[in-house]
Length: 195
Image (cartoon, one colour):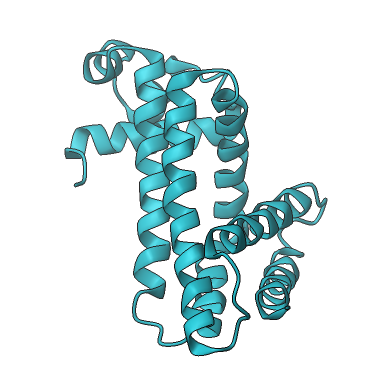
């Protein structure tokens, strides 16, 4: 379910500023200015800075998970799902950079604060289940050898997140995006096909 229009606009502005300033240094006044509202209205809707941050992260992570799920739902084979999944995840250099800067901040906070940890774990479980489902489909099709789909999901996630961590540090992150996307695809397929 999507938040009301006013709150959605505030979440969008918060996410925009998070990518520029970081989660830990999020200036509420800058969010309010970007949204064209007062800081008081921002706090009226979300009560606290932490509530605003958590609501924004929940909204963003939910959108990402839905987008991946929707894009691969009707793809018929496991290998084609891997390709569609990676193409969906590696959407555009600017959007991926923004997301991973925010996501890395979330992971840092999740290691230290229970509220952030619960959110990160929910996203982690949702995405890992999608990866496990793709691995299990490939096993049923006979294109991936049999192994624990949950273990395969952890490895797939490590390949994706590791690829993004390498890519985000590139000086030419825009120009290298497509190369990293293809490397990630090939690494995942090679892992899933290996015995």
